[in-house]
Length: 230
Image (tube, rainbow, N blue to C red; front, side, top):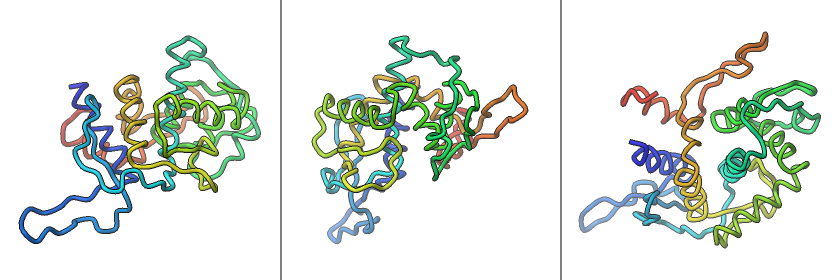
């Protein structure tokens, strides 16, 4: 079941940003998603490419950037540099992040587990920046680690300028590189599914500021209800 889930969520995460094109059978082939710039469908365990369209094209990748941040966080957990129950103090820089967020406030105390929930379920920019500061001291230093990880994976069409995926000149990746990053995440760090496959949960659960968190990936809701996995 875990193998099936790994493949499913690899495809699922990629399809949210890179809708892959499918062709109808027959003499007159029709592209079903003509608006797709690029895409790839990869079998997670083997790395076999099932389908691709312009898979090396360098494009903006938005919050899929955060998959590399998740890898670095899970690696730090595995190497006991941090633990899920560690509590950190929210910085001004993290609290000021716009876009998708879990509304961190300056000086707030929050666990690393809750920050990871925020990143994985709500694509929270503030939580990602806070974890960047925890692990590397600053977002810039963390982004350097992210680019080093990309280099270690042998990927040639990815450069990160920030850890959140917010649009910035020179920040890009490709469908193939994103698929390989997703593969690295779900195959070598399957514990990510403990966060990404959950449809709803709470942050700050035992406090007065209990916060209902709903997964932004609506396909998780469909999967949970149809297969009764969640």
